[in-house]
Length: 150
Length: 53
Image (cartoon, rainbow over all chains, first blue to last red; front, side):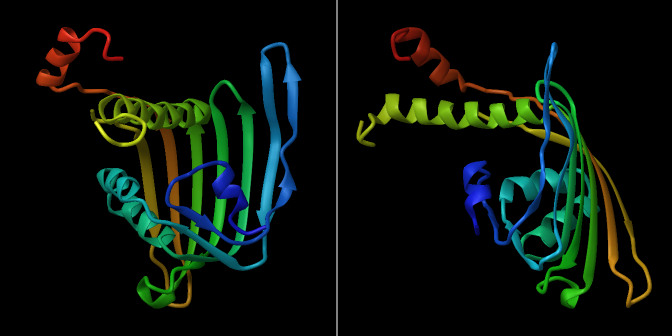
């Protein structure tokens, strides 16, 4: 199912091809839904492309190595992906991702192993992104009219 | 209007022998902050036209 997942989660500048396997168990508790040891993986090689100037800028501020990650992901031919997710949907989620592969445009296609540990409120981040998208749309519509003309 | 999505990273990289892969370990802590900065003249326009939005 190429491209369906990136499109459905609406991440700008993300293109991906391939098929993922796994399960995302969600447990309903008194305090809300919890992702309970979700795991998504593939060992069928394919491609992942994330080309966002804003992300590169943001990662540049975090250091040279973070910038290297952004450069790698610009055209990443992966061989293995293994992602795990754990935590409350309304709170801080812990996610780990192990992605192996190479970018043919970087260091002559030398193998790269990317291990990411992520912790934080993923949902808030995604909501903010959608609020910002709506906000700019609202302003544009008010100023120019929905047809794009003032 | 300037949106900021700050991501704090603690990256670490290991360069190994030529046949070994480049290993990049990245710890990401999401610190989500959105700042909306309204320029002064726009601010004034909004004040003069409260019904604009």
